[in-house]
Amino acid sequence: MLFTLILVALIVSLIVVVIALRIYTNGLVKELAIMESRIDQKISLIINKPGK
Image (tube, rainbow, N blue to C red; front, side, top):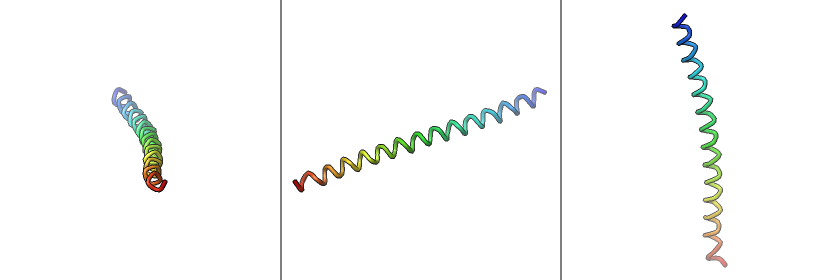
């Protein structure tokens, strides 16, 4: 009985960790995309300045 409870707890914790990692990596990907777009905007501003 105790062994099965421990096993179930381990499986549940594993599932929770996997879901948390997925949410975390999705957040990181979104943040990286936002950072990239900001960097692109800065680069385009720097490139456009000497032309004016």
